[in-house]
Image 1 (cartoon, rainbow, N blue to C red):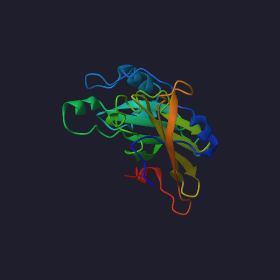
Image 2 (image 1 turned 45 degrees about the vertical axis):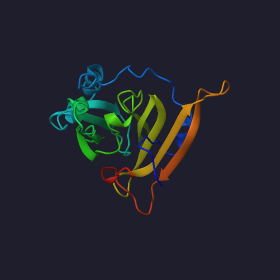
Image 3 (image 1 turned 90 degrees about the vertical axis):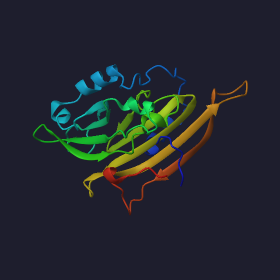
Length: 224
């Protein structure tokens, strides 16, 4: 199954939540300016992370989004999801090179109060230049969704073009790791008719993980 360069979602029990068309937003609201990340976003997200996590983050990178994820692995400890970006990732606009990758890290809470890095993936979070006029993450109100043993990376934009691309992973006790669950990609266009919703669906594509051949979070790659 071929997917456009867009975003994905949770499993069937959350799919209905995301079938509504995204709201229109002002394109220039929180764009990356002057080659740097939005300082307000960085300050808020970085300060919300435990010190035991921040000291494990790669040097030279900054926090684009960080969030408590509940108890993803069922051990009674709070876990965290983190998205990183280059300190001056917007510098790509001054060159012919594509925007740099945005690593996503999953940290699991430990009995001693620390946090262990469970996995890293450099593909599931869309890059700054994959959203057209808007950024698929920094212009997105909710980059993550979590429920029980599931978490979803929510790439998407609602300016110029309107699309969502949600990728979901679940914790597998046998694997002792997170495995790919689903990818759901949807897009909408402006309604050119005087009646009806402002946005009209252009389609929806779904990819499901194979229980017989699980793909771990660290090994998942976006289909070309």
